[in-house]
Amino acid sequence: MVEIAKQKIFKLSNRNKTEKTPEFITEDVVEVSRARLTYYKWINRFMTLLVIISLAYGVCAVLVLFKIVPQIVVDPQIFVQFSDSKSWVKREYITQRMDSRAKIMVNFMKQYVELRNTYMSDTREMKKRWLWGGLLSYLSTYQVYQEFAQEFPKISKELNKIKASRSVEILSVERTGGEKSYVWKIEFKTYDYTYKGDPEFRALNKIFGPDITERYWTANIGARFDSRRRTSYKRLINPLGFVVYKYSQSEIKS
Image (cartoon, rainbow, N blue to C red; front, side, top):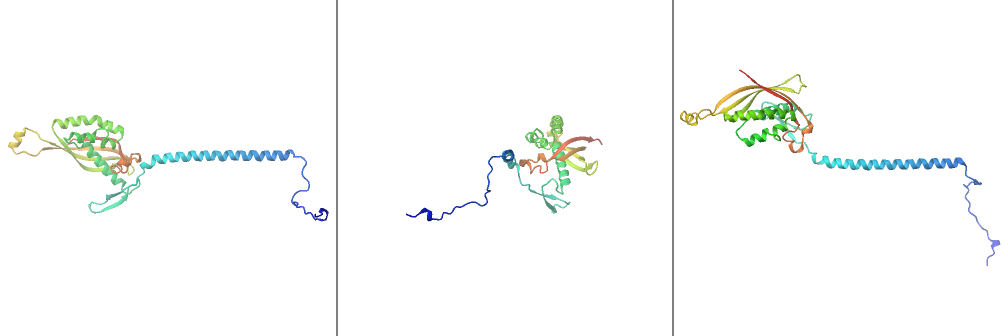
């Protein structure tokens, strides 16, 4: 047996430890601890609120993306003729700031006047053009189309009565009211083709061609490009969102 009295016992002690420990906790220490607890509690609540807002924002963003993604399309390129020669063209991406905006506007207004005034005996074709849901209503505001809807039955009745068809020739297009004006003046001529008289009389006298009546007109058009009309399924028909918001025409009496 080893005698304990003759052994050396080593004791580990912490030198950094204060010699005296406080016998009681003061009110200052309690207030500091309480303040820290309150501070971290509100920080925790604030971070929780940020996380909830972030999650809500993320959900909304995902829903918006699911709504928008099907309508996102890559705009095609368009070949624009910039001279009188048919062989000289330039290629542009279809944007709202493309250089050929004014030229495209003029072409659309010409097509609009032709679409509104051309008439043929094909009833189904004319319904597709002139009735609601057709191309004319798509290129017009609701008010402009309603004004036309009151006129075209009279025009159809008049032309059907004499069994006539009508074609259009654009004479001039010019802007009125300055370079930034949305109002344009178009002068055009219509040709009414009719077969007057008895068919047997015409055959005996070898009159095979139609009688052509020429009439001159002036149209005042207020038009603009509306990006809200640039739908994905009609972007090739109307790439910049052309729409007519004001239209009037009158015949020039000779």
